[in-house]
Length: 375
Image (cartoon, rainbow, N blue to C red):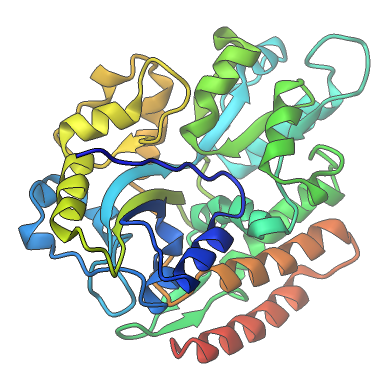
């Protein structure tokens, strides 16, 4: 059976809404785990019977949790995972005689050295420690900060019964993580200029141009940076655990969603079963190119080291063991956006008090959970 594949890189959710309005949803959608709640509450997704999905028992249990709706049922087949780590300019670190950072204090020192000690040797003070997509577009400030929040033993929400949550934005560990990053923006000034307005597209380029040396990001850009910067110049290091917690880092991935209203339910299931199979996972890993759609395989029978010869991938895989996915609230998007707006505000305005702003965010998230009937 022939499959028509359509890849959308911009405004994916908007276009999906348009298709839904016309009652012309695709048969299959491969999309972020964080979009599950939004799609499920609109009635777009077929429930997945985990027990009858061939190969479902071979998938990472952590990946299955990200295919679960707020009602505890499954609405996707796990397809790809990723965990965040730090891509670092190894050549700069070694030139300055610095060790890989083990603590947040070490990390701050490395960032300061990259900012002040001319690691690229051009005689000018034109480098930064961190590069960060710290703008509010699509919630990037929250997305970036989350690895530090999780590494300090905190989270955005805490479960409070089946399908119910309370926000934890004013938890001391959460506040400490956001304040640590505010210090990088405001006190030591170790973050690339303009970061508070940047998305990932710009941040990738900032890193490639040698304007900064530490990028907390997923493995999807590793092959690109190996090609554009040079394999001997970059290394992958785990995000150090914070003073109050850890280890933890942002976990993301994609699910295969079988869309409601399809006249081809058997074919949908066959596609999902192939996608999660070892053969499907290996094809998705696309090991000879930089366009992999499976970042970390979720099928436990796939030997990632055998598929990816680059040992730096192993750091991402090891980080996945402590990765934290977005919780299965009815809609994560407004929660991420509200968080990004508040976090960005304290990075952009150095006079802003982090605790005060996070108290305000706590109130906003409480209201959002109430509106989603998830509090």
